[in-house]
Image (cartoon, rainbow, N blue to C red; front, side, top):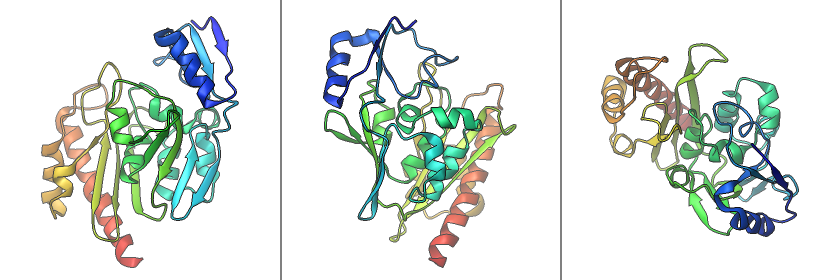
Length: 264
C-alpha cells in the first residue's frame, strides 16, 4: 500500500524522486490503476505527476503532440485528435474511468488489456520520455522498463487509420482490439491486442509486419492474419475463435481503410 506521496514540480524532480526510491516507487497519474484490481500496486511510494503541466494537446505542423497527463475523455472531446484514437479511447466503457485515466497511464500500465495501444501503433506514434529520449510505442511496451512518458507524438494526424474492438458486451473484457492504417504511399500498419500470451499479466500488442508486406485481400488476408498470431484460450474464447475473428476484423478494417484512402 502507498505510504508516501510525493509531488514533484518538474519532470526532472520526478525523475530524481524515482531514482531515490527505486523499485519502491510508482508514478501516480489519474490513479485509475494503482488502487484497483487487477492492477493494484504493491509499491509504497507514489510520485504524483499532476503538477508537471503535461496535459496539453497541440498541433505542430502535421504532427499532434499530446501530453501524457491528458485524460482519456479529453481525447474523445478534442477536435484535433484523430478519429482512430477517439475510437480506441471510447473502448474504455466507463466515462468515470475515462475522466480519471490518462493516455500516458494507459500506455505504461501493466494491465491485461491495451485498448489504446493498437491504434497508437497504427498511427505510428512515438513517445517523448521525461529523460529526453524518443521511442516508438511498440518498443516501449515491449521493454521491461517503464520510463516516465512526457508526450505522445502522432507524426501525421491526417493518416488514414481505423480501430475496432471485439467484446462480449459493451463493458466486458476485450477479445480482440485491432487497428490498421494506410499512408499516401500505400504503406500499411496492422496492430492487434489480445492475440498473444500475456507477459507477467501484461498485454503485449503486436504488429504484423510480415502480413503488411503482402498485398492480400479477402480470405487470403484473413488466413495470413490467423497464421501470424498466437492467442491463448481463456474465458473470452478459444484459440481457433480468436484467430478467426482477428482475421475477419483486420480484413474488414483494411477494406474500409483502403476505401477511405481512395476517396481522399
